[in-house]
Length: 293
Image (cartoon, rainbow, N blue to C red; front, side):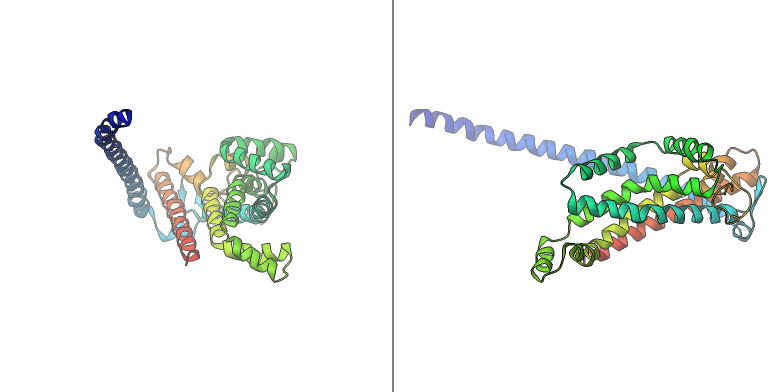
């Protein structure tokens, strides 16, 4: 009894000090978070303001109707090429990535699923320029395709694959177990439950992952330098032996030219890429927001 009486005052005396230290740590954490948010917001607004102001002043009707001519002209070929390469990448990446995500989520208890997860994590961390070098060695040189749409689209698809795979896996993991059990109770097969119940329920999140992968592919430069090359002409429809233009090349090349017309093309291309990526992110948030209600 006496020992308990001796310890009780010391614990009660230490309690205010512990609460004060926790409050100080909490205030410090909130302050650090606020400073980080402020720095991030200022940097983002600054970047967007520079790109939008300089890009809007460089826009003109001929930008969308004429191809690049030397250090001037328009960006019709680059706009078309970006659309072709991104569409080709999604055509290849969506079936494979979504299929891998479904397999890992629904049958992810074996070595194959663990290997897919590991490879997806590794692919996310591989620099895009390394992927471009891989495409150059294997397709441009190894298969003899030269700079081509096929080589560029395949490399972009490889870059997009892990994003789609992991997003699909996470989306299916959020589907309520009650839905699955109700479907099984009604006699539905496992494949029917996955395709008719789980995938539609997780579709908004899956579409968000696809849109984010599209944004990544639109903003890539390094892998396309090694695979797609560059062309000032419109795409002729050939998949191999046919280089193609794209917007990020115009930014990378024309911003360093000593001509005002070339700099204007770079600013306009940066404006188009930024606007497109921003629109994709807004659309992705809208899609996943609608999926919650």
